[in-house]
Structures are given as C-alpha cells and as structure tokens.
Amino acid sequence: MILIINICNEKLHYFEFVKPIEDILIKNKIKFETKHYKKITKNDLEKASKIIICGTSLKDNEFLKHIDNFNWIKNFNKPILGICGGMHILGLIYDGKIQKNKQIGLIDNEYHLHHYLVNSNEFTYSKNKNQMKHKSKPFQGILFHPEVRNKEIIEEFMRD
Amino acid sequence: MKLATLFSGGKDSTYATSLAKEQGYTISCLISIESKNQDSYMFHTPKIELTKEQAKLMNIPIISQITNGEKEIELEDLEKAIKKAIKEYKIEGIITGAVESIYQASRIQKICDKLNIECFNPLWQKNQIELLNELIKNKFEVIITKVAAEGFNDSHIGKKLDKNLIKELITLKEKYKINPAGEGGEFETLVTNCPLFKKELSLK
Image (cartoon, rainbow over all chains, first blue to last red; front, side, top):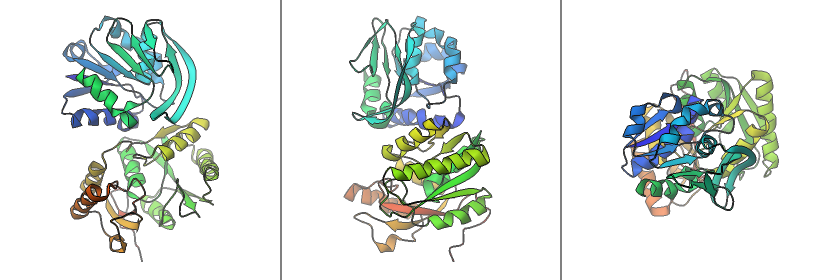
C-alpha cells in the first residue's frame, strides 16, 4: 500500500496537486491511500510500503507552520518521495534551511511552481539543486512537479 | 474564500467553477477576456459575448475585458481585469479551467503570484476522456462552437456532447492524435445548461 500525503490547506488544491498523482497510481494499478498530513496515524505509517508527499500551490504554505507533524519521518525507514513542498518538508526535518528560488513554468521540460528550495547537509543534491537524495535513508526530493511532464519519475519510484 | 473564475463560457471554466462551489468556495465574480485576435494563444472563445448571459443565469457578476490579443500584451489586460476583481469583489484567488496547457497555466500563475492571490486549477492534468464523461454525468449540456483540426468539419459545429460524440472523439484521437477534450484548440465549446444555471441558455 502506497501512502499519498496531501499537504494542501485549501481543499480545492487537492484536484491540482494530489489527484494527478493518484491518477498515475490508478493507471499503473497500484493500491494507495491518501491522507491529509494532519490526520496521519501510526497505523497508516505501518501499513505504507512507500510514501509520496505531494506539493501544493505557491501561496498555500500553511504546512510550514506545522512541520512538527512530520517528525515521524526521522523514525521512518521505508522509501519517501517528496515533491516540491514535500521536498521542503524532507529537508526541514533534517535541519535544512529554506532559500529563495522562484521558478514558475516549464524549465528543461520540468514543470516548476515554487518560491523556495531547501538545503540540508543530510542530503546530496543534483547540480541544479532540483533533486536530492538522503545520504543513508531511501528518501528523495524533487523540486519540480513530475506529475505534469515527468510521470516516469513517479512510476520508477513505485517500481524500485 | 472569495474567488473569481477566468471564464470563457466553455466546458472547462464552467466545470471548474462548479467544482469550486461544491468545495464550499464563494464565486464572487467571473472574468471574461474578449480577444480581437482569433489566433490568440491565451484567449480563444468564439461565443465570448454569451458569457454575460451565462453569468446572469448563474447570478454571478461578470467583468468583461477587451484585449487586442497581442502576445504577452494580452496578459496585461488580464492582469487589469483581475486587479478590478480584487478591488470590486475582494477576491483572494482565481479559478481556471486549465487542463494541459503549461503556456496558459504558468502565465496565469505568474500574474496571481505578482498580485499575491491564490490560483486554483481543479482540472489540471485530468484525463480528458474522464473529464468529458464527468460533464455528462454531472448534467452539463455542452455544444461545439468552433473546430480547427484535421478530422473535424462544419458538421461538428452545434453538436451536443454525449456518449456518441465521446466515441467519435476517441476515434479521432486514435486516427489524428488530437486531444479528445480539445485541449490543443482542436475545438471550442459552449455550456448551454448545467446545475449552476437557473435555466437553459437561449441561443436565439
């Protein structure tokens, strides 16, 4: 079972930032459950074989005020893919610092929609800082939205 | 939260409005952009004049903005209209019917970012056949008003979206690689009735 974590504070953003990821999993016949980050239980984390933390809109940053809701990540050892806001969360949990990096639109065939990137010493980064991997745990973050033009990244994460 | 829909009168912006209402958002006004340029990348709406009638049927005020439709300058006209909606209706965000077009979506995102308001795209990346089926299921009466792609002809104009038309669009997709919901500008649509309307739109 894949756990998809919705970080949107605005309900209407579910359709833009969560549903496209659910649709990729449905197309690939992969079982999943979607939960809002404020409603995740110990049982949800035990059941999950992998986790995807979705992104949200440029203005919908309420989750940053509730970063403690993600402290479970430090004790989690199964794969996590953090997308945009989800990447920020992964970095912040490992003492990362947010840095201004506004990108909106298609850049090198990747769809970007963010004001920030995150720097954490616990991760190694791609040259352009668009992707990061944890040094010892199976956690990865992607700054752009793979559900738009890079669906294969999500499919590969499911397969690996 | 008070929102405005970037409204063309077609299936996508009307359905996006309906989804927002269902989720409890207030649609304080509609914004329609009338482009004098038939080939505009941003605004191509052959029956834009009917948006005022649709707005009346929904009992939602509408801001109509005319643009010459010159590339990028038309975005300044869109920004003007959004600023007017912020001032007159105190809106805090925009709803669009964007499904696939990064060109349109990212430009609207940039304007909303500049004006510090939310941008909602509830149909973003939606499977186009699923979208067409949902419109029928949710009692949206939609007709084709313009065609502009191989496989389409004048006989399609005025055709109502139903199961048979969806079958035909799937066939055209397989044969000509078109977007079955017209996302590439293959065809334009008009909503003549839907649960948001008090009664059917008169085309006389």
